[in-house]
Length: 171
Image (cartoon, rainbow, N blue to C red; front, top):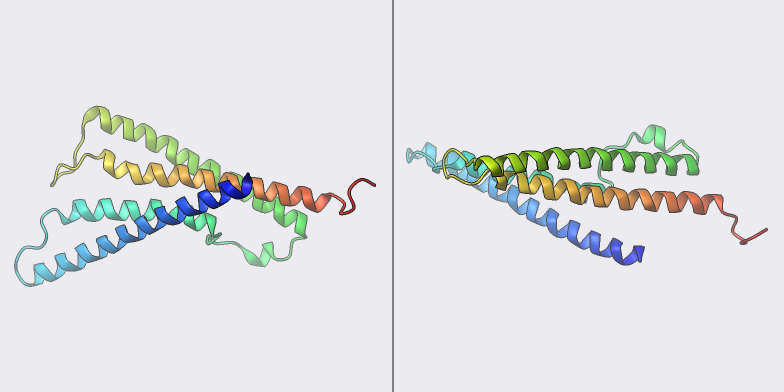
């Protein structure tokens, strides 16, 4: 079961990260086009700030789960590489648990802001885009990161238990 959930989580995380990267590409294209149009004297793209803020929020928060999944975050390898196997695995489990708790807190407090923005009906300054749209990538990325880090925590704990279990079964 863990294998199937791992494949599903990997597929979802990879898809979400592609959406994030396409959002980043959109932000770059909008920014470049806006700069060029301003240089040509046409005044730029109307509402570019709204669009860029939305696409950058999506790019950032939709790519975080994939960074967790691929273990692309910064690790102090000078310390981690010198630890004995079981200690390193426990340290990885601790890091996964703390990362999951941090991302859950971001998601939880983001959900409160999302609900408040929904109640107030806030919209962006130029296009009138509902501000809740800005919170959706944050919420999706944060809670998907929680799922990824909890899977990593379980995998670390299973690896730790296997390290402590004798290979021949019962002795």
